[in-house]
Length: 268
Image 1: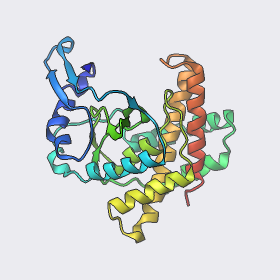
Image 2: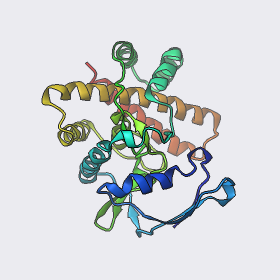
Image 3: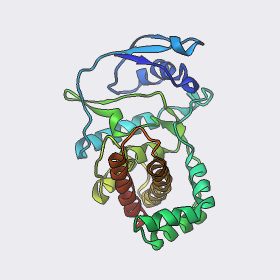
Image 4: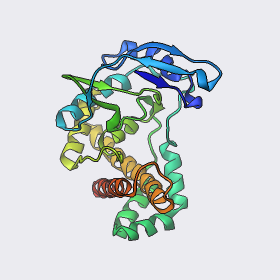
């Protein structure tokens, strides 16, 4: 499979990840067969192994298998990647939180537009002020939406590692559990969400006494990220400047609001 490299800020990073990280992890992914990374953008490309048809489904089985795999790459020694200047595709969660705090009236206006109660907003804004985000960093895939994982035959595969970077563990968990995507509508309700979080805690051997705190931090992270996504999607709908059609964006917005409300109701 031929993949042109058009993201100049990430130039060479995907190849570096394949050569220095993925080769040591128990993951199924398309191998790089050949590549050209040069200073001229037009010359940059990667040829990847063809794994055949990939079924991009989301169910309990693949969610829990990906959780176990995620625990493996989250355990990779970060000292070995800390000087590589790897960057994610979106702002850090604290920047999202700061933006939301500065645009509180805009957030509540969008909430009113979509019949989200002010109580939900108050829960989240109070929690942002009271509970700072963890500064713990792990190696994250960075963009683990449904289009980047699936089944190739009977094997679970994880694709597109170009946004691999150091971030909070909640980053990958949010993308697995609660991120919405216009091309991949899906549901992950309270039961599966908590099953994934419990499984992650088991895989990383997080002490039982710390697991409720871990889950509370996730719910807040998810709520903040979802508000940031809601503002982004609403802007795309208002300005009609997205590559996705209004029907896709409206469906994505409804899904994101639903997940926001579910997580906000879990915040103590």
